[in-house]
Length: 317
Image 1: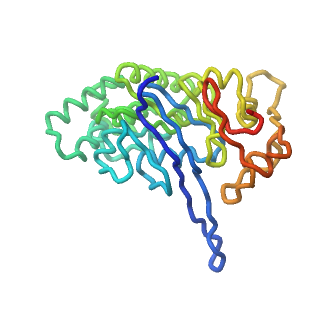
Image 2: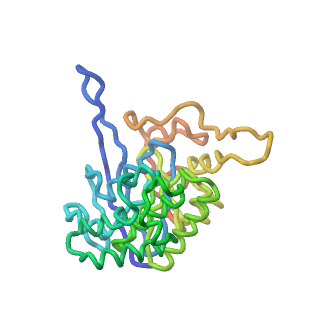
Image 3: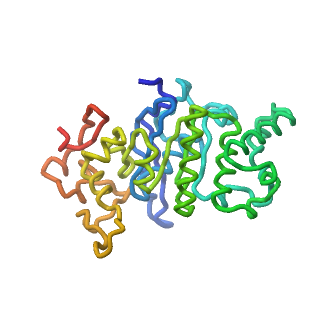
């Protein structure tokens, strides 16, 4: 197996949520003891419902949130306490909305140059050369580099965001829903571009998405999150062919089909929605699980290793 580009060990993040003037704050566990490693040059897809902790996990990896516990390592180096400029050279983000993530008052070439300017040790001529290189890599012209974001299409703006992420030549790119704000035809172009850049530059992606079809297409491995924990992490082909956790099966069963008359699929999860401020005892999925049995409500499941990954479920044993 390839050397891990990034390793996450026991990562945890808690928040305090106010309940009013006289009530004590609630403890909300957004990410709870998450561990994984991603081999160099591969793609880890992270999926799950809204509120399961995907974006919080990404923000901790990027250094935008301090973890409550655990650590992140890149090439064996601890990122906690690392200088922010050094961290930026290793990991860069591509966010969901390419319009709100770009400064509307700056020209495209200046937006792409900002990470280099922030480093403070790159000459003006080198900045110009690397900006031009990044524009070319993502399929934009020099003339488009003189425009403002509002003068570009949604797909072109996302190419600018990708060029900005790559200008520092990072090892890891965290993609948080990078295609969800785009038209379907443009999504395919951006996904093909990301795949091409990964091959050419040897990048490692952490790819967060609600779109299971997109994740199946791009990911080498898939991690399924529920209420802050990874409940299944396996090779992409195996997970989509034979999901082992009941929640993973429910997620795959919830995908809408284009066939008329089928309506919204019933995945058997009931009306109970997960609440990170009130995590149930035992298996945290058991109030919604159609396969729940006696041990699930009392005892938390252990992680079971499989040939192609792992699953956290009593039924896996």
